Length: 120
Image (cartoon, rainbow, N blue to C red; front, side, top):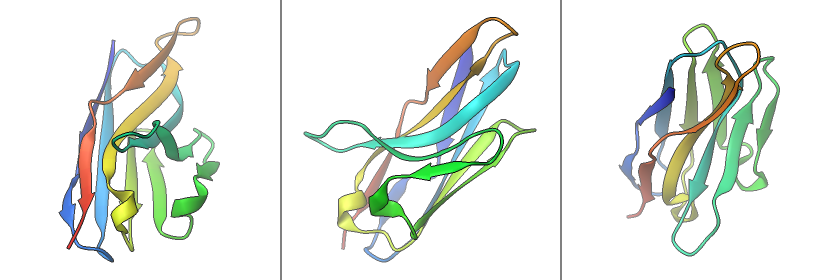
């Protein structure tokens, strides 16, 4: 099994910053994509940012220029630096990883989520 452990959520004022971290542990042969999704009450879970093992990135339009995803392939970790936070960024943020247990067996893993609240 692969486990994802997130940290770094919390309460921050509008305009502030937070940094989320996620570490993948377990039986891992390789990880293709790692990223972050978020879900707020009454809304569907959406992709926030994703990075491939080769370094290509994808961001939802609403966070471009404010959020930065980074990744350490050797340590199987991914971070999300969130700047200029807005109240609409309030959500539960979930770490996600997709990869392989071995050369044949894929995994698709989710973290338990960390709450980010942007409020004055």
